[in-house]
Length: 311
Image 1 (cartoon, rainbow, N blue to C red):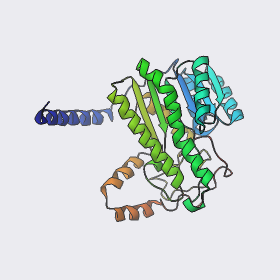
Image 2: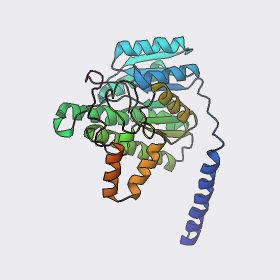
Image 3: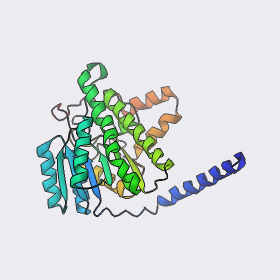
Image 4: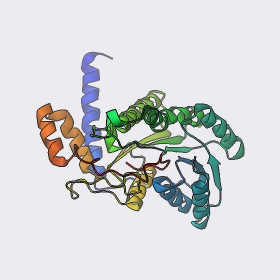
C-alpha cells in the first residue's frame, strides 16, 4: 500500500471512530453477560476488591478470590455467596511472590478452570516522601503494584489467547498518570502498571485477538481507608470517591469493554492538559489543584501494608 492510500485510510478511520465515540456518548454500549465467566480478583479481602466481588456475584459470575488476608478473603467469599454467587473459591496468595502466584494459578486452573476475567486489584501504599520511604517498602510497592501484574497475566493470558476470549483489568490510579508529592514509589509503580497494560493491549490487538479486552482504571482517592487522612482542596473538581460508587463504575466499565475508566472524569481533562501546557503553567495549576499537599495529612489504615486497592 502506498503513502497516499495509507494516509487516506488513516484519515477515513480517524473521522469514523471520532464520530463513533461522539455517538456513544448518547447511546451507551450494551453490557456484556458475565454469567458463568470465571472472574479472578486479587486483593479481594477488603475495599474495592470485596465490593467488585459482590457485584460480580450478583451477575452470576464464578468468583476466584485472592488475598494475603485469609480471614478477610473468607469474609468476602461468605458475603459473595449471600449475594447470590453459586461458585466462589478463595485462595491465600501473596501476589508479590512470583512462584507463589504461579503455584496458586496452577491450582486455580485445576480446581476451577481457565480464568476469563482477570482483575489485578491488589495494591499497597507507603505514603511517605521519597527520602523518608524505607527501601523495603519501595521494593514491596513495585512488587505488589506492578510486578504482580506481570505474573498473573503470564499465568492466565495464554488460555485467553487460545480461546480468543477474555478480559484483563488493571486497577491503576490517577497517580499513575500524574506525579503527586509524597507518592514517589506509588506513582512509579502505577505509571508502570499503566504502561504495562497499554503495551499488553497493543500486543493483543496486533495478534488480532478481538475477543480479548483490556480495561485500565485510573481513579482519584477512594474512601476505603487505604488513603485515610488525605484531603482534596477542591472536592467538586476532585472529590474523594465513595467506594461503592467507584466499584460500580469499574464493573460497569468492564461490562462495556471500556479501555479507560477515569474517576472522576476531570482526571482525563487534567491528564490531557499536562501534555498541552508549558511545564511552569503545569506547576502553577498543580499547586492550585493541590498536588503538592494531598498527602500532608495522610494516616493510612494504621500505616499497615494494605492488600485491598484504592487510589
